[in-house]
Image: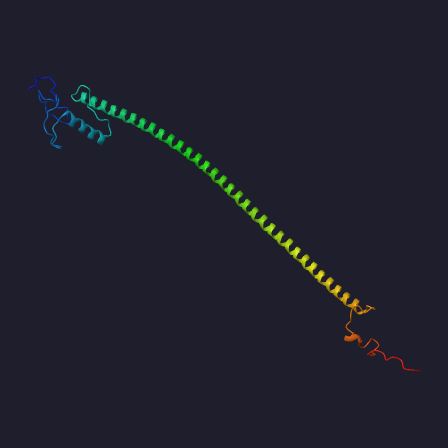
Length: 221
């Protein structure tokens, strides 16, 4: 029993009035099971209980005073939380840096894609211009060929027309020469060519005066 005037040590578990177990691996804690949770009173369960009570009351969790048992555990737990928080901050910064790098890479890829698209558009426009020029050249050649064929056709038609006119003039001239030859044979006074009015044997046919046959010799007077 504790002497009068001496403060009796109590278990550091919140609300526990038991005395700490001497020689325990958890100094300052009784190690007895909690009547509510059934867990033994240790530094870890005490920390969890203080967290629960702090959440219910809205106050920071921790032992009431640094001198009580468990304060060192709370300090270690707080240091661990700070270390975890710092690690999370460092991880978040690294993630942000990686995100920035990925964003820069994406922007560079988009710029390269834009340049490639512009180059492709320029190539397509050049190909269209070349195709249009080739089509125009083929159309011009076709138009020239059609115009040349039409011109040659007109020239041939004109040559044929002149040839027909020449042939007609030649036939007309031949007809006139025949008529002139026939008329000259009829009016020859020496009779070198028998006209159509002369009969065989030197007997003349009807002359132009309507009298037929040769004249009778004159009789004696």
